[in-house]
Length: 228
Length: 337
Image 1: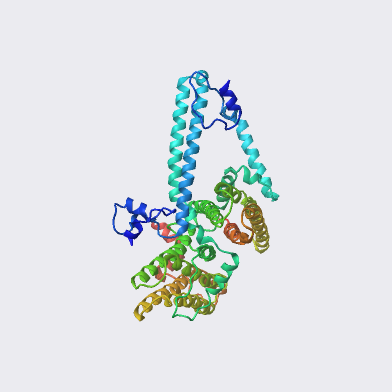
Image 2 (image 1 turned 60 degrees about the vertical axis):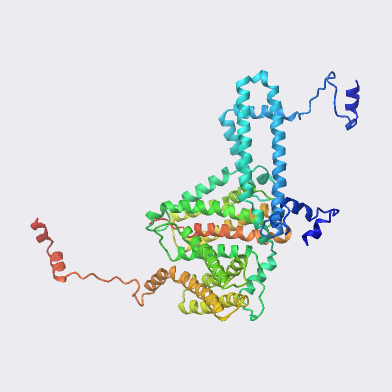
């Protein structure tokens, strides 16, 4: 038929757009991905809760491993999630709570302090790296910074355990070494992910706020002393 | 001028004719049809970029909703009318909400406005940090003040970190609020508040300085106090602090004062502006040191043991007779009951 012949030659006959009504024009222009996407959504809704939780836990665990061995991979960046940072932040805040003598009225604010420092610090570093011309997105950066708190949380656990055993100058030296090592590890891990997204001559400008951020957290961990 | 331009119809670039016609044919070129941004070209680019993105988004969302509607039509027989309608309504509500939210976000949270102020190289930042301690003697021509915000912002955060360290070491107890809040409030309050105040004074005396330049100047002027506090929160000697206060604090104050002097005309305005800034800056450093430092001093003295004055316990004035009597005869006390 004339209409189908015209349609077979691409962009032919565009000058004559009107189609007579007795020739039915049919076709499927929609991209066939649509219906299959709908099927996917329904299938994840119908799966048992255990599957969903295990999938998320596995993703979080995978990212923890990536922080432990920081190499240039995009796993942290590609599927960002904020579960890990939340878990780490809450753990750190709970462990830091109730430190230093006669601070009954400061038990509450210390939890809030850690939260505020971690989240607003991450937001500010993200904004800074975006303003300096970074290509990383807002939540990806939050994800990376949050996950890289993990070495410091481990250091906090170690410090807490060591302080239960004894407290003195040797213990302080041990704590200092552990906290310094984990602080360096955190900074190195986060810059391995963040600095790649910056123009090469500006890496130092992005690294400094990250350094300051982890330094403040490391300082809070180091000066933590348990209630007598 | 305008009558002459009215006869030029053949300009390819859209001559002044259009503006005149839109403005109702007034004799002067209608300023309302010019850009009414504050004159910086990057803001124009930002707005154009925003408008283009919004148009794209609206077109994309329109196409998406059309696709969705087409898909819903296919499923009509399978899912039933009620489910399909519900889903469609939910989709449309979501799209409308998303459009509103993204418009508001693009309008208020557009950080592209701040992007030019962060366009620095590490070498430039290092140079400016060092120069902030070197006063420049030229006060007859306006000195060049860099208009960037990266360095000042990082310096304020560094000061916050140093202050936190000082507060923790001195065991400051903050009853209403938190350590973090106090540190951030103090530093940012000083930077933003004093900048605004000095800018206001500069506006009153007609000095040639913009708010951005004032923020930048004061921000870099915090480099000296940062060093002083870093040293003296760890090494507690009074004379060391006073020496560093005068030296580094004085140098950074002189640098800021010289920059302001070069941009102000007249003796009284100069005195007012520079005196205020100098006073505030030096007093701020003094305040930061002494507010979070005295408790440590007391602790150190008591540890040394020589002069017990700061931490000495003063005995209460209890009559000795009563005390000794009660202490000697507890039995008497018991039998009284």
